[in-house]
Image (tube, rainbow, N blue to C red; front, side, top):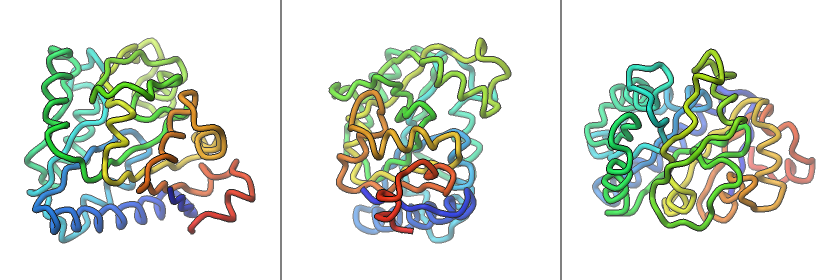
Length: 252
């Protein structure tokens, strides 16, 4: 795993997008297509804004899978991850083949059907973030590190639900759904490459736990350290609690 630290969110987003664009072009050139997993949330704003404006990516050859979604939330809600992906990635880039998780539909059937599509061929790149509680997708601690199911129906813990309020998606924690669909940890790890975009001081404790503590279901993002081709993009604020020993090893 490689960790890179940048001065602030904008430069982090630019660097991560540049890296992702090269990986996308290489996948399309090598295989004729790129299959990707896309994350959402405030942490991905700058990254997706730059990536979708990057030239010479043949988005018509990109197939996108949805990382996670609330159960029971309509696509019209501002916090809907389907709405987020349509507005910030799919429509801006011109992706024509995508698989969205309809959390207000027949959830067990959606989990089965999109899971089958997901497992049909290898995933080239997974774009992910890490939550304030260390979650990876909506796999809150203690995360299931064992299941091979591609998608899970999960319960969201209070720290995760409060984060959604802090980021402005909801006005009160009582409005945040208690359940969600999430890609499993082991499914994420099956991607050939993982790009993690993790800015902001709010993530500093999680970053320290995931990258300096034990690899543990109690710090779900720590599992990224077991993947052979992961790059983590931090800003100086999210990296602030890392020890000098760790920071000395970082690629800047």
